[in-house]
Image 1: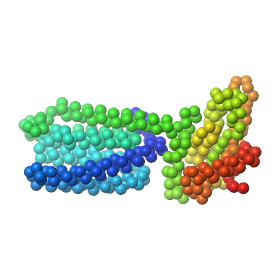
Image 2: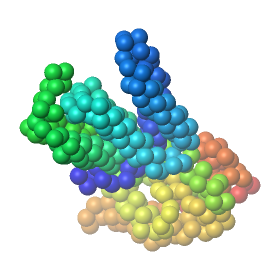
Image 3: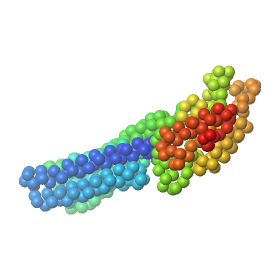
Image 4: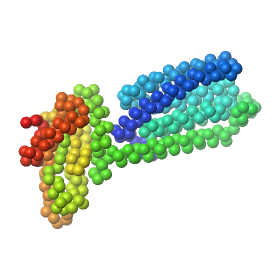
Length: 367
């Protein structure tokens, strides 16, 4: 439960934003189809009052559907959007049942087609990839429908008003079963979201070091760029490569190499400051992201380099310690690149300079 209630990571939030846009587009299609229902009612000999009510409701749903679509196109700008649009889907179903019940009480609770709107609203939270939204929509649907049941039961002047030849009889047992079904659909949807989160988490996390990996970097950096632009800040990317790391694998074995990597990651985490992101992109290569100008970032990375040198690694018990070092190349956003690939190329060029100059150094300028 704690995992479902936790804020998703950057990859899940980005996937969820795409899911919100997909749901918004589907909502527009469904809303457009609702405009056909009043026409069908007229052709079927329905009353003018029912037709006007249906037309008014369809127009309101269409207006909101296009509003949610316009907001969803501005990906992740409005953090409240998935909760608001899900609340709208649930509440629209409740309002529809209220309108039906106003004309005929049994229709307000026993109209299965309208009631299924709750199920659709709950299931459509899954593409948002956020367990909080699934639980929120389910809890809202259960609360609103339970309240509607109480209101209908209290409104009926006699048991006969709760019986209909078209919709059957309204009973507490039957309504309790529907509330239970809403709970089941909520739990199933939440479990699907949880499974999706775990799979994506595995794809965005390095198995050995538990650091974010290249997949995480590709999703996270564009959002970080937007934030830096909005705040008028600077961002520096440091491409780090451990010096002569292959010697540890060749001399002491791959098991020792894995332990050395975990030692390096532990040291870098301890030496890093809040607001800095360390990512393993493969082998003995890492990326460190810092919301700092490149000059200040050079001082930070060089201090980390010196700090790592003061923490030798012991390949095995009783063996001589091995001093670890790294070379690094830095690139600054936005003046040296406005996308991840350009920054990585610029940083890699400087990393190669550091290696040519003898390794165990940090380069922030070409030359």
